[in-house]
Length: 451
Image (cartoon, rainbow, N blue to C red; front, side, top):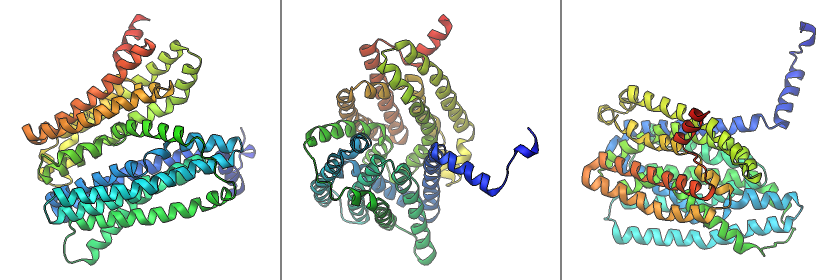
């Protein structure tokens, strides 16, 4: 190719960008970048907290923030989860009344659940918690978590409208960014170090700002449906679907928050801070494994629709090798450099470096035991996933609490790993029982050697 065939002009570059946008090549990269930078901002926040408020107060703040992160799925009733399915399909079929009905159902459920979450949560704090900063921080966390239920609903609606960037950026990137900025501003203007209630107040403000921004961006979409009427005839099935998937997500999406929250019942705040930071670092390895599972989901869906188990196993086998490579790389990295990574916080954090390889059991299990939750979901086994999650969430909480009670920080970490192994192991067994296929890494290796 000669230089005459190459056009480096701004017009040509703009045309290339427009073609990439039309083909959807840029949007996934923006979403990936938002998630990665959001996770990095979480570590920046924890590092800032460790430096300006100490590990003890940091642990109290992180406990309250874990509660605030779990509550949105309860405040929304989890009924918004089907938005990407029900709103998108209704709009594709020009059934605007049905799309408006699903949206209206979400707001009605939230109008019931949010006051309940706030009332029950605040009453529980008043009855069970001693007076002091913990009570105030947890109270702000409950109100913030309920408010974030609205943010969660808006994100689901944005996904249903195919506004994927609007669905992703406020929660994954902008909210942690604003939290860092608000806390940084407080540190600059205040003569006293921040306390747990101060951090939670910054958390609340970041949620309010992002909710306002999100709703402003979605206002044109809502206006287009304003005169369509509301067909809510399928509300029962919408709510049922949301409850089933919401229970499953409690374990898969919120296992870190559950671990931190229930470890607070048996650990000192300083140990809670170390456990939370270690879980955040391990989250990067977990994200890599989940990203592989998400990337193969369309191919898994097609092979399941064709009832082609051979194709299904071929997809799983290729992805298993990618996932175990990423998980083992994380394990080696954290084993070799864990002390230096946690030493960025302080010397006491550095002494807890062993948490990193222990907690790596979670992404290792995800890699070794296969994409069982994806397969069960794609085969319409949402009720099975719900039942397993409803059993395993209290089991995980109990294991973390009892482990911390019996053996302190090592016991809590061990309890969490046992819970994760049990959950993923049960799902793998269920897939083997239902479809007669072994999705685990040993199954992959056995098939490779057989060839």
